[in-house]
Each structure stands twice: as C-alpha cells, then as structure tokens.
Length: 438
Ligand code: GDP
Ligand code: GDP
Image 1: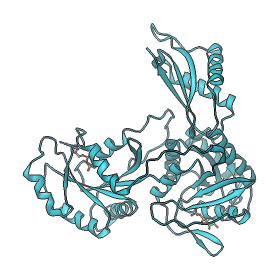
Image 2 (image 1 turned 180 degrees about the vertical axis):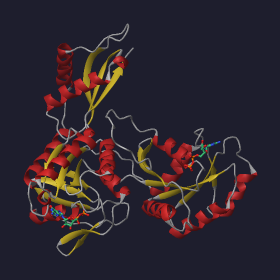
Image 3 (image 1 turned 180 degrees about the horizontal axis):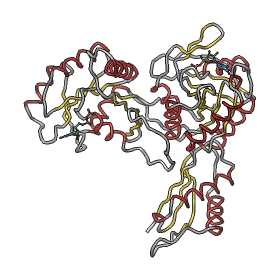
Image 4 (image 1 turned 120 degrees about the horizontal axis):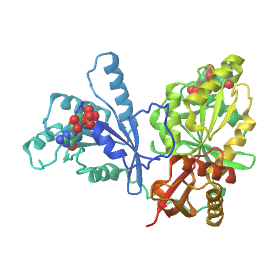
C-alpha cells in the first residue's frame, strides 16, 4: 500500500507549489487525456524506490461556517483522517498567523503525525520568523522552499521514515502462480457491493482476513475456475453475517490505493446514471496507474434500448482513452453477463503480464518499419534497431535506435497497434519508450 501524505495549511502558503514539486517525478504518460477534467488534488510522488500519494487539501478554514468552506473543511478532515502523515505548511515570509494557530489546534484534535514546514524559506535559515513557529507546538520547524526545490527530499524522507516502509523488492515468484489482484472501482451506488456479493456467493471463499493495522489493504482471497484471485477493497468492506457490505462512503484515497495495488481494475459504471465526471476521474486514475482495466456497465436490466444507446455513446465520448479496455453490459442483481466479464478480467491480466522476447519484438519492429517507415524530419530519418521488454503490468516496449526523438506520436500509435495485434493485448495499456543512442 502506498503511504499517503496530506498537505494542510491556510491558502497561499505554497501547498500547490509543494504538491507540484512532489508529484512532478511521475513518468510522462503517452496516452491522451482529451475530454477529461483532472482532479489536481491527488497525485503520485516518488522518492528513490518509495512511491506515495499526495493530497493537496486546498484551503482549510477550521471555523468555516457553511457552504463551500464547510465542504472544504470536511474534505480536508477526511483527507487528514486517511493520511499516514500530515505536512502542515506555514509561510516563513509572512510569519505566524492566527489562522495557523487554529489549524494547529484542529490538527492536534485529529491526532495524526505532523511535520511542521515553513515554506518560502529560501535564504532565511536562521531567521527569527522561523523561531516563532515553535509556538505551534509541533516540534522542529523545517524550512523549505517549494518554489526553488530546497529541502524537499529531506522533507519526504522525514515524512516517510516513521512508517517503516519495507523496501519493495518484488519477489521473484512467477507471475503465473500469484493470485490476480482485482479491484472493483466505481462511484457510490453503482453496485460494487452487489456485484462482489454475487461473486462471492457463487465462489468458494478461501479465507477472510482482517488486517492488523489500518495501513493494510483488506483483501478477500477466492478462487474461480482454478485461478486464484484477491479482491482488493475500495470501500472498507466488512463481513456481516454471510454478506459483505461497504461501511464507508466513497473514499478517493482507498480507491487510489486499491487501483495501485491491483493487477486488474474493474471500472463499474451505472447504466441508469450514464458516465459522470466522477466516473471520468476514476477512469483517469486507472489510466495513470497503468493497471489493466475492464469496464462493466451495471444495472443493464433497468434501462430501455434508448438509454442503452445513450450510455454507449457517452462511453465513447467521455472515456476515449480507455479504448483498449473490454466493455461489458451486466446486471449484478440479476446475475447477467457475469461469465463473459470474468473472461475479460482473466484476459486483461494475461495481456498485462505477457512476456515478449527480444527476438520476437525486434522481428515485429522490423516488419512494421518495412511496412511503413517513420517519416524523415528535416535532415534526420529515425532508425529503429531493436526492441526489448522493459516491464510488465503495464507492458513496456523499449525501442532502441538513432534519431528517435523525431518519431511522431502518430507513428508511435501505429507501432502500438501492431504490437497489440501481434501479442493479442486487450485490456491493458501498452507503453512504448524510445531510446536514442548517439
Ligand atoms: P496554496 O494556496 O497554499 O496552494 O499556495 P500556492 O502554491 O498557490 O502559492 C502561493 C504563492 O506563493 C504563489 O505566488 C507561489 O509562487 C508562492 N510560493 C510558493 N512557494 C514558494 C517558495 O518556496 N518561495 C517563495 N518565495 N514563494 C513561493
Ligand atoms: P455500491 O455503493 O457501489 O456498493 O452499490 P450497491 O451494491 O450498494 O448498490 C446500490 C443500489 O443499486 C442498490 O439499491 C442495489 O440494489 C442496486 N443495484 C445493484 N446492482 C443492480 C443491478 O444490476 N440492477 C439494478 N436494477 N439495480 C442494482
């Protein structure tokens, strides 16, 4: 499970700037985000081998009376509750303010580990203004400059240190023998619990473990057609008698963590509601994670043929970046369409973990180039020499050659389509990296 760091502080202290600093290390994504408004408040960060989730809580007004401010305070409290550690940001230039005191009190009440950070501290290490912040009672004041990138690495190390994260050295066990980690992601009320209970009612439940600490994901192992699965919880599933029920409302953090932990994500939509902004956000996170994905539109029993057409159109318009995913129309309540859905889940996992040998990749690359060579750009004609696999889940194909920086996006898409067809890759993103040797 990735640890979660929440950034809290009054407006204008530099939270967004710090957020951008912490998340900019993310690998660039090849895919197209057109038509998707992205929620900038949740991001992925990385320090060395450690990855973490950062939440920028926007503004925090502990005494906010009503309306949007009250809602923001509520969101901030939820973010703090879900975080492993809070970075409390104050403004080193403006000095201590009454609002900082209010926030400090609120954070003390919430009882999360906190690091106090004085931002905008470039060139003022020994300033008297930093000393004032000790009054807040959070121990050491860490001076940083988000804008100039000073003190950021040390800050993240300090934040992650108390969590005693294991070095995540992927064990060498064969992918094929490992259970498939599956997350069911979707807005509240799309039918996640109904679907999970339908599944688990049909299948042999191997065991059910309650984790010891809140940092562990709740995992429900089960088997289907001889294949082992682990269902990663997205909503605080609890067993109640013979059935599971979600005890929490929708949680962005839990959803993000489940997506990151999973091999395959089932994105569940509600046919009676169509594709909403929140659905598109979740879809965006899934794409960014690189996980394999299957889309299921639930409650198919409750819509007429006109609505069905509408939903299909909406998916094409609003989720064009998930074109590679299989699409299923199901009814969890009426147990319709669930067999083919399973086939797609298994196929998505196979695609995501496919092994592609260097000789085969290189041969396919040469065939593709022979069919259609990359365009010359000015003096340069990109020359593709060989390809090898650079990773799994998502599969990464690394192509080596010369002048590859002149390869167009369209040509990359052409190659992607060829590789997808040859390896029968359905339900997984495929990343293509170009490495030029000079
Ligand atoms: P937020 O409202 O807390 O998210 O604050 P922003 O990230 O939007 O920053 C508020 C202002 O402070 C912007 O004008 C930033 O350019 C500026 N700022 C952010 N970090 C630093 C810093 O390290 N040093 C200085 N001098 N200014 C900064
Ligand atoms: P969750 O919040 O995503 O876990 O959603 P639930 O499983 O609690 O379902 C929300 C509502 O949708 C409940 O009233 C379910 O009975 C209903 N529901 C779930 N699946 C279906 C379905 O396939 N068809 C219809 N018509 N209703 C469904």
